[in-house]
Image (cartoon, rainbow, N blue to C red):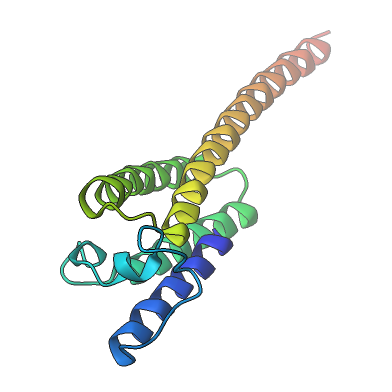
Length: 158
């Protein structure tokens, strides 16, 4: 999520420089068809209420980092994993939509955007894996405690 936040900050930097300096040429522009600046100046870069997608991405990754820290402080909170997985699923759906816009509507490949899409897919996979492992651990822990409770009761009844 930290890498996603840094790339979103870079994309915001590119968008801001393109607005302020018309001659600005970002390093992520490789050719006419492989260009982050063309995506950054397109109408697709402001999909929700006129807010730049890069700013929404910064907020998105900030929330994911906050959820990860919350889980680190309270690892028994299974609901944090469920919320995180749901948020990351939403992020993947948005990534698929933005990827469709970039490749099929704009016909431009944005290298920074592609990296963000890969990050989103990876985060979802990692989150689902951790959620599954935590669920298995909690089920094991619950059955272990139950077995211990029954074992203790039978020894005190003699």
